[in-house]
Amino acid sequence: MIEAQGLTKVYGDKTAVGGVNFTVHAGRVTGFLGPNGAGKSTTMRMIMGLDTPTAGTVTVNGEPFARHSAPLREIGALLDAKAVHTGRSAYNHLLAMAATHSIPKKRVHEVIEMTGLGDVARKKVKGFSLGMGQRLGIAAALLGDPQTIILDEPVNGLDPEGVVWVRNLVRFLASEGRTVFLSSHLMSEMAVTADHLIVIGRGRIIADAPIKDIITGKGQSRTRVRTDQPDQLMNVLAGNGVSVEVQDHELLEVKGLDPRQIARAALDCRVMIYELTPLQASLEEAYMELTKDEVEYHSMITTGAPVPAQPGGN
Amino acid sequence: MSTSTTARSRTSRAASPGPGPSFFRVLNSEFIKFRTLLSTLILLACTAVVMVGFGALSAWGTGQFADAAASDPSAAEAMAAQGGDLAVTVPTSGIAFAQLILGSLGVLLMSSEFTTGMARSTFAAVPKRIPAFLAKLVVMMVSAFVLTAVSTYIAGLVSVPILDNYGPNLDLGSSQSVKLLLVNSVYVASVAAIGMALGTMVRNSAGGIMSLVGLFFVAPIAFQLIPGDFFVEARKYLPGNTINPLTAVEHVPDTLEAWQAGLVLGAWVVVPLVLAMILLKMRDV
Image 1 (cartoon, rainbow over the protein chains, first blue to last red):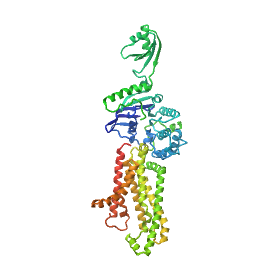
Image 2 (image 1 turned 180 degrees about the vertical axis):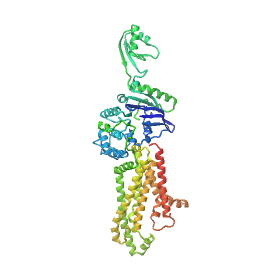
Image 3 (image 1 turned 60 degrees about the horizontal axis):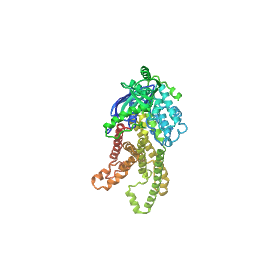
Image 4 (image 1 turned 30 degrees about the vertical axis):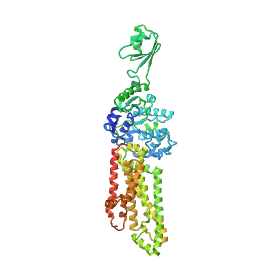
């Protein structure tokens, strides 16, 4: 379990992370999503004790990372695929890491096999592709068989087969009761990998909810309605918190009511409807909706350049 | 995948998770890191080659000089002015280059951690940071000491027959020979430690090596060129100028006493190391 309380990091006059509170629970995959420069990597580095928070605390399994007697056995992290001396072979890199915790050579071979680095383990990391670097980073994270795993953009640079492998791996790790905290800029990937989502924008937590709630959140559930009397139906449906959009000649999109309520309203005023389709927002849409406000709000009050709402590889 | 993760029980989290980063384990890790980089091994080999090569060259030159002194009174006078026994310094004649190479290696060991990003892995495994630094320091200093001592001895073995050819006698077992070997080895290990401190503070390979070169090669010359008593006096306290008083047979006027030189060199090692460790602990990786 990872717990952040009032976690803040200020660089000069720029607040990278502004007093965030969140908890990452065991037994599920928690996704960490946010646009470029939102503070994802900074937060992860603070969890690993590499950056000191300006204020606030973050604990892993109840203790600050540095206080654990065997840190690599508590928490494994892929923060950056380049956290390795490129003149050393993958095997020797892992061997040196393992030596700090008396992790046996057998385990080094295991993680090399698990991550599919068997053929290149004796070669210098210098010649590694981005994908192989990611695999080596994941191997290092798994070395201590930790209860908590942090992966910053693990699928970056992986081929489709690697992406599926990471997805299965993190789901498997979470199913074993481990805490998995994963950042990714690929929202479609998050949608199929994560159980829970923490959305961060401009150093603040915008959303912290199960992924289903974020996708089908209030104001997000939409229903496509086809009727031959659109005007009449619109009058009936109009009301508090309900918005109806005319999409086409006989096609309406209704927000704020579920299909049952729409059907009842249509029945009551004897309007025939011939399509009633619940629409699920994609994670992209939900995310854009969430971060749009955050970005606009900040753009208005700061003189800095507006931050694009696209998710980033940060 | 399943073999590894089911191998250990995940149920009892209250129990100790297993061995952590004790100093001995971190030392082992740093030794693995030290010996698995080809660039490190190349620099070590270069040091040995330079030490032995310069020993042999110096033996040849000293022999010819002694030869000339035997038939030329003015050369004999010049030789006497040098303080008598030239042959004894032959094995350590490559020390100026050894200190440059191993000092640079000290810089690189730390700066490369930061330039390659390896530091994130290192300090994630050893979050207290200082044990990792001290372990690396031990590995670097012991390696520098042993390599300098062994290369000096080999340079001596190579020099003996060359000097024999010309006349001067070199006794590798004499107390002065042993003293030169040990003091120079300690000195090179100290330069390597200063290099590590610089590498930690600067976090940049080129900058660290330039600082080292500036301190050991540029400053002594610059201090000599700048007029004024202050610089003449200050020049004695530069780290690179402590080796001569430390190895002198007798105290040479206008230089530090051996014990003073020892203290000055010690301060040049300890102060930067302490600063480096404070910065390492405080700064973000």
